Length: 114
Length: 111
Image (cartoon, rainbow over the protein chains, first blue to last red):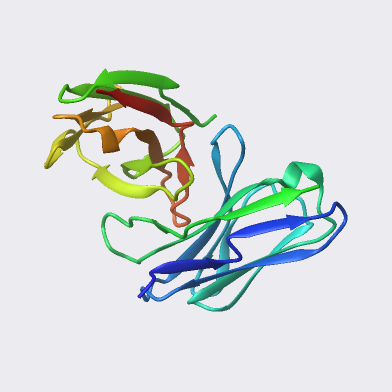
């Protein structure tokens, strides 16, 4: 009965590779997010989808491409991985249009690029 | 620009009270959130303020002053398990509902 799940939990890969991270939520939420948390613990929004439509697209290299096949899934594909991509990537979801619009986070994917 | 300031680290004693401050300067405002993040885990929601005043929820309370761009999180009867990072986030106005996050305050609770 996991609310927001991500796979894989850990990902270790070489520079230049292409990798994907998957996210699924079973909360019935309309909105999903991808965040990057670096070693300094700064949580930075990357993308957000609302009902499969991209609504937030921050200044992120175009090597990062999100895909939302349906409103319960938001995947993140990364091409040509670089050392600076090493971070924890969190997926989150939130309901709409409830007042507090709390975001529920997945457990995170720790990406290490060697 | 968008800016959220919190102290980097705080230390407190078990059983005590601690107040974590957050000041913000954002182009829009549509609510302020506090999240707790234990090391190696995901952030979890603690509180939400959109109107001025104090919101109390058990041992945790959060205060907001929109005119001063200021909030605080008050933790009472501190327990060892409260050792964590506390993140302040402001929701931007507009339809995208983006959260602007502070760097977090790392709280260490000592016995």
